[in-house]
Length: 282
Image 1: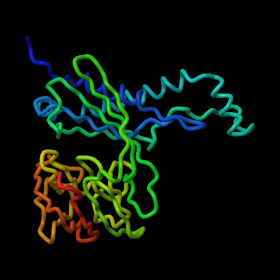
Image 2 (image 1 turned 90 degrees about the horizontal axis):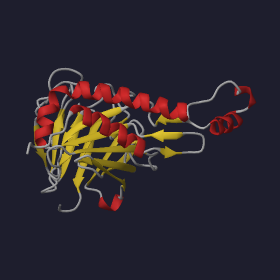
Image 3 (image 1 turned 180 degrees about the vertical axis):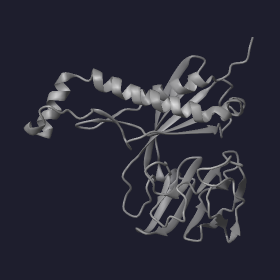
């Protein structure tokens, strides 16, 4: 019997399936998540990693088509309701009822950090970033929808983040003031706020901080965090430079991770400093 393996086509279809299962209705429109994190078994990840760019492009194209299809199939009754809400001056115009929450798509690929996926399994976790509470960095409170395709069957469940179960706390100060960010998932991206890059911890700061500046990854078996620098002007941990993994927007990611102490001061381009604290023991 041949070993199962995840095909690129299956990954693309899994992303679209997750989107359809993750729609969040409001009053005048329905939101689709903008961020899709694709987890693969180590063997599938290594086999597909050289074509992640092509997979991402086709997945985004399919998501666009799915939204257009949903809007085309929307009930005329809903259209009339929208026209009434928008005012009589908009009789000839009906806004799309299904939209991407952030106006565009972001797709990431990662090797399964918990070693629970088998070859052929595809897990897609989509995410809405809700409006942050006062004093909290963008992306702190979220809810996520997880879809796992396994041997032709799909299981979907909704995950609500719980601040009490956060893995780590990051306090910092950017141009908008002092903030706190709670790390509630195994990997986050830190960077300057920009419309074309999804970052979990969004900083309002100088252009010296890259749009995707650094990543933090939690090792589930130990709870220890690691850090990777992806910036142009560097990242430090307690004053020591983190080996660069590749300049933003160019070249191959060297994937150089270093261990992060349970308490550490992370410097981004010597402009913004993040005080990291691991919470709990696992």
